[in-house]
Amino acid sequence: MAIEAPSSSSSSFFSPWPDRLRNAAFILAVAAAALAFLVLVDELSPLRAGAAFLCIAAAALVPWRLNNATASRDDVRGVNPVEAAVVSAVVAGMPDPAVLLDRAGRVIHLNLAASQLAPALRKNELAQFALRSPEIITALREAIATSEPRRATYLDHVPVDRWMELIITPVPVPSAFGGVEKCMLMTFHDQTPLRRVEEMRADFVANASHELRTPLAALSGFIDTLQGPAKDDAKARERFLSIMHAQATRMARLIDDLLSLSRVELSAHVRPDTSIDIVPIIRQVADGLEPLARERQVLVEIDLPEKPVQIAGDREELLRLFENLIENALKYGAAGGKVIVSLSTATSGEGAPEIRVMVRDFGPGIAPEHLPRLTERFYRVDVGDSRSQGGTGLGLSLVKHILNRHRGRLLIESVPRHGATFTACFPQPKSSFPA
Image (cartoon, rainbow, N blue to C red; front, side, top):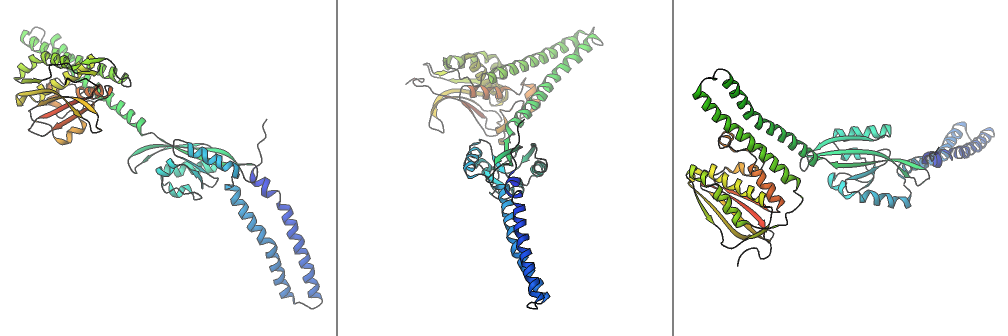
């Protein structure tokens, strides 16, 4: 069985105490005898003798008390100088904010990340004064009282809202006076990304369930009607079957978009490396949407180069990307009567050359407050209009994820009553654009 090293207090201070007390007692005994002799021979009055004895007692005991107080303070925070550099280097090298505290909660060491997280933290000062969160103070008090690990989760509002997890772990640190000190290591972990992912997952499941439940309820209701009151009504049956077909198509498209989005996210870290000519892909998508353009009475103008324009891409994903952009323009910008699809080269904000495919409509446009959220899953400017157009709310989210996988970006510009422009930007490989 391992024997725990004696604490610094017992090894450094309690053991010398009997010697110190014996020394003080000897001094006081000699002083008492001398003063008593002087009183007996009438050289000193009893009152003055008592005062002198008190002064001698103070002289003998006060230095011992001062030494004891200084030693106790050093005992709490006295780390061996050789070990201090190692402890400081370990704390400084931790990637997360870390603070080493003594038994009273005073700061011994802290790293740069901790200073940035809580600028009020200072060495040799109590951490409770700098960390005002009630969860932190409670966990710290419990750790000090029990010398056991503690965890706490709290919301930090400065400078931005962040969910943080605090872990307090007792750690043995060699003392300057021998033995081991029970210090405490506080580490902070940013849980904000995990919280946001969890919120997104919950929102996604809720929205997907809602989107599927609505057409499913319609299908179930019409089936019950056709099996009951409208069983022999030919006109009602024809109308209901048409609605059921539209609802089934909507469900199928939603499921297809969900599967496509899942596949793109699964391979988001893998950049496509196949060289693809995007000119015929855009023409194929435009030709396939020609019936929809005629139905909406929209003229589609194609402005593409005659020569190939190569990018590193995935053909199926690019087909889906351009299909979503052009179809959205035909559906929601139909009031303008025209859609322009063009391809050009430009330079990104970082100065890198890129290929841009622009889809512009001349419809009612989009209000500025909606632009930042258009690529969120299931976000719609007008829910009723989107559903009537057969939209799933996932089209632009899918476009964004496909572009992210291709290391590209999506630009959205719109002015109400002046149409909208969606631009897919791709990194331009060398010699990808005709001279």
